[in-house]
Image 1 (tube, rainbow, N blue to C red):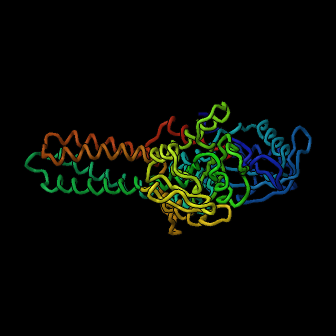
Image 2: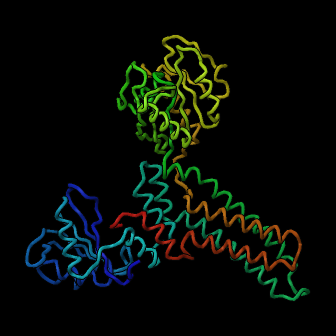
Image 3: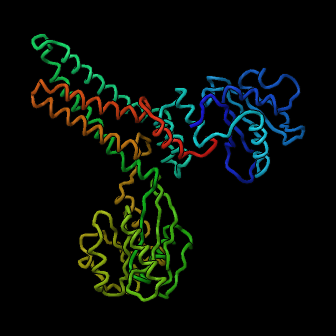
Length: 455
């Protein structure tokens, strides 16, 4: 990582045509850099108070690059808690890039991905959990995921982690106090109280781990794969769920040769719908590859929509495919009931069966409700803390260490308290890495490298 004393700069807005573009500069020399490139009647930026907006021109080598607005923020009242200058110029592909080059020539360096947010963390404005919330908010695909990210940015999830961390510190301190006492002077209640507190902490961790699945769905979305034999109505189902004609629909079997993915939002969760090639035995190399891709997606699916043609009797291939499905992750859809019904519920017992005449829209709402039910997407409308993959891994390790310490304490082997304390210290160190009380360069790199440059 580069020196944190450097003054950094980057374009903070997305590339492309737009009304404005923003170039952000942060660091001790940001106002000096602004003095070198910004021309304005009156006092230069470095002599202006915080919160000042200045209208003027950005110049480089005597040439005017653009007319712009310049905003001044002084430490510690800025996103990074450093002196910050933001220049608002005309949007487009060229103007912002030219101004950035002028800023770099005036003494700043190009920021690394996520470096502005990393400085906000290093300067104590936010913790690592809140930093991750910034990225979640940028990537949010629904109101629900945005609301959860804002709740995390405000510190709701951090408070939960800090509570567990502080409680565990207290338990560890009590046990270390027992070690400091002589055998006759040690308060008799300290160890039993520590055991009770440790069990409470494990319950807290368990409750947080239970939010993982929802957090995964909010951040990554649910993968819902539509599969079945050729010409059963898979692409028709995709189009019906999307509300538009995205996939080609034809009475000719084998129209879909590749996977086709689109996203819808149900109960605030992004649903990645994947239409797949029809499952059958074929000698066509292209269709065989499509079927291989279909099976790969089926293995990864959070939910499987298996479509069957009601007008045709159940055959051995359908039977084989149905046996491979997991009941809790599958919905069997009986389509084309307007052509007659030769498949009965007893033929697909154990699965969720929906008679859906998709070509006239019947059954669509029921399918949506079943997807919501199967994935557990019901939403109360209130955002709450949900952990991410990094948090889950650390919480699981901490839970294991605390359980090991409890086993020792509950055994009554006072001579092993030192080992129990050691396990608790491992858990404390792990938990500290969640919010950034304890961190190392590799941890910061893994988090902030996922950010875009300029954030």
